Length: 125
Image (cartoon, rainbow, N blue to C red):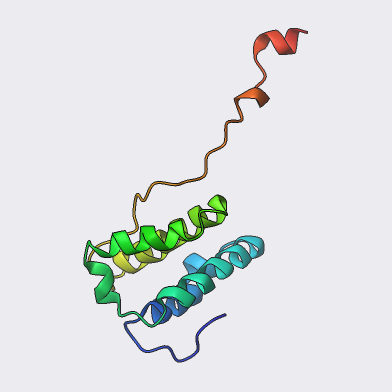
């Protein structure tokens, strides 16, 4: 849920600013719904944190620990860290943060779909 009146300079404030921006409002409704869900979970964990904390590279370890709490749901874990990275990248572009400590965090979900690839011999059959 959007945190109304979040203190300026907090993660909740940044999320509210992002939700109001064309970068968010221009997304497809289904994408907005998915992003909102992830943003809500990010705010539940980090919402009251001042953005300055995310300029300390040691925060990356805390983000990974948070991601790992979702390890039993690997796709959710990855969506959350990617969304946090997206939010911080948006904030970085606008000068709200100096670095994006969530950028490039390895994903934990993997899927091998190579068995679904059709090769020429399959088409010929």
